[in-house]
Length: 511
Image (cartoon, rainbow, N blue to C red; front, side, top):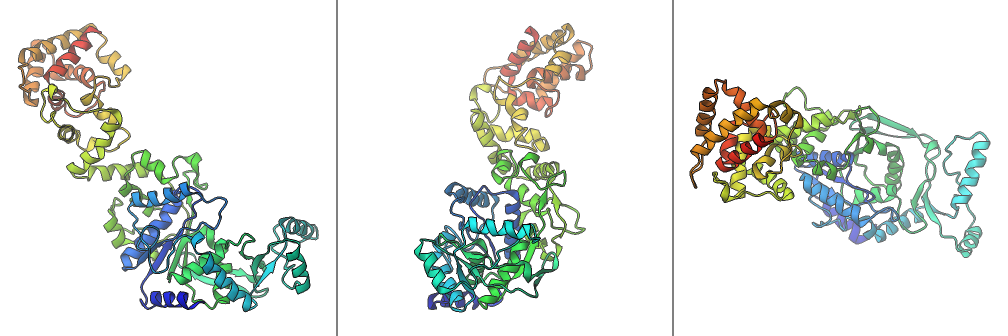
């Protein structure tokens, strides 16, 4: 190891036993919920232990890595509130934190392995490898035989000849042929692999870029990563990585492999099940706090504490690596929506207004002083009044436009079945005409009608018609809101305002 790298590593290690974990996504797609959970578990452990959470971008797959995916991953983490202590945009002593910017570092360690006789060049083309694999299978070898070691003992003169032909070699690690490699996994217990099945795998590709396994080991070592917490799709990579650690005489971190996330049908979660990417949940009105809360429960047990609706601070306090389950967890969209609704209900009035304002902007809705209702001179203030009477009915951003649209627009959806039942008959028209007359008699310029006054008008009208108040309220609700359910009808009338209430009642009686 070069002196500069050694000094940087020593500075990291001088911090003692401080926990250092990392999330190391490949920018080959958007931030999937499985990746988000991996990031979250690492973040929770770092925050609980007073450690460091490192973000590293593993873009060694240059053909599939894109700038769009890179930015989407960072945006997704920021939206979830999973801030990193070292990484892109922040820096740190072990930067750069993007693998394509660390090629000189990987070359230095490859040179060291080569000088030690632990790495060697391989000139086999893909065609050569496929031909020999087919022959091996035909001869009774496993269906997926590993590398056959063809270039392991290649004579120097043949290497020179292949190089002269223009062949660029990849570089392989000389692995053990006997015995086994094992580790004690934080989640899965003892894991053991036979070395005979771990053939000389590639460290550096012919294009000069490191493989995932080689770069990850070098980076984890230099960045002082104490715990590698990742998905169990990496279990098969771990024994080869441990061989690299041993070859370079690096201390090994602790490994923990979390089980995959399944769909409701117990098959691997995919887009056929519904949303799987973080930005899709965001578009569907899921709060970041709710998504963080829910994915924390996937594969992790909070014990017998009861309430599963938890804040970030509560998650940090409760989180434990010992409680990560080894069995796969199934994604339950209904449960996510329930947790999301509970988080919305627990917001402060100011937070609820801030959450709902973009919905108004999206539809082009705003309050109008001409409505003659309290708060109509300021859209945010008026929206606050609307959300106040809505109460816990405001539990989803997806359904919110249906619940509040009639406060802001005359072009609101109407339940046709409700219209047919409550409005399309002579009795309803007679009742609503009488109510409209009662409202018209009470309207005064620039004087809002209160909820209590609207209640008086409704009850007085019902008494004159010799009806129960409910018999007038139901058709009134449909006429004013287009729905059979809403917040308290008198509070709704107050916020719609006398002139608009009158207009809607008249419209309902003319149909």
